[in-house]
Length: 626
Image (tube, rainbow, N blue to C red; front, side, top):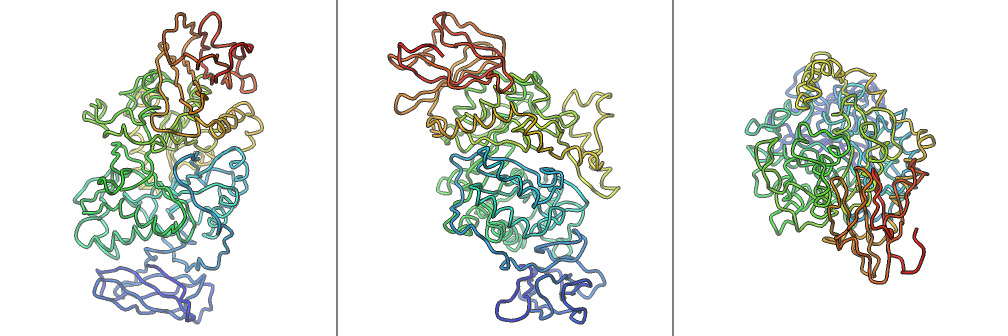
């Protein structure tokens, strides 16, 4: 669908689904790059399925156009517009993707194993907030060891700033960050540096402002299901096939025309479909086909933790690659902050939770979840560790903290370093949020630039959502909850990348941990059931990663006070035969801002430092203690 430059004629081919209409015209808009005498109305031809199509000779790359429906005065942008240079209420622009010269022909794509994700919001990743400025920072991310960039949604949305989850032109990268070819250059450069790029896409709803799909068909949406944002998208009702085709086409579009390495699908629990093939399975199948020989990954956010999404199709699943693991985040925040409010109610941040998360991914796999007064999760003991994307921070979780504070501002430096080590060395697929690697001092807020009437509703909705946190529901806090439409929130959320040079300790910690993960075979392997763990104290535990050649590693973590473990009747602490444990890495290294680490496995038995994580490896007996 949309406007395609014809290869054999000096024209463009238009196609749009508008079953409500008897006639559809292409209206070449004023201000097009071609001459004014080519402006006019051009009739399209309807077929039996409600699609209108035809060649328009006055159209070329850069032409601005609208659709006019049934001869009415109003004109609307193309539902499959490739670019909206004046925003979602303006005309569409014809874009010829074939004019861009790619240099990534040898790029193999990415699979989920061995990846380190980095979530980023282009509008705040740099002060300029553009694809061009973001591309300049890519060599630094590659040098750090990032392997896949996860870009927050970029589909065109109204206003001058926003997260992108209220997109309305799903095929049009927002004008706020640059032109479509700027996005392509960003991807091309990432590939040249050895990094993949996946895009966060929203297929559970469209934004309320600038959404003109219902002008073309009232079958795009259905009231048969309820979602968190109103009417659901119609994937299984009357006339659902063209709707399914529209969204499948969009998913493949990003892979084909922007060479993306996969997708992250937002809030999949709000994608309702009872078809014989769920739309998520269809998207996964078509995306892999669109990628050809390249590997692609599909990651889902799914609040109920339904592992059907990642099971193969021959097991009744949808064939995706990974799921966000909220359980790890919730346990981590409770351990770091001491607060288990709202959706963290069912977590205690105990050593056993972290051991179980390392071994099994999800903590809730069907048990009762008192916060929701129902069971949560599905059995996933058999899934490989890379299936679970683990994180301490993401866009949602930071913005839900008071003041949009990042988690290093909510805990002690020692605990923060230790938790970072646990996440980056754990067997899951770790994900950092932009600026986390250098403990960015700026906050990150929820911001959305809506028109005045809608902005007020969004602000009130935000207040009501955050009231599930008892501390934020207090009268003195509610008055401080910011208005998302305030431009200051957007400015405050922008990164200051020069802090890499000022926050050298925490940046070095991330760099060294990523290197350790990449170079140590037992951390790199992400083997299913490749580790075990034991509780050592009220806030202390050990994870033992089993190697294949006597190269086991211990990760000892203590979020509490210094611990003298004497006696130590735990077999996971026993070194290989004729060996002793030596320190390979410590979060308390002075170069990270720590206070040093004395020997852990000592003649006086085990002495485990507080607020620290230590990595130990075997050493032949007779060599001095480290």
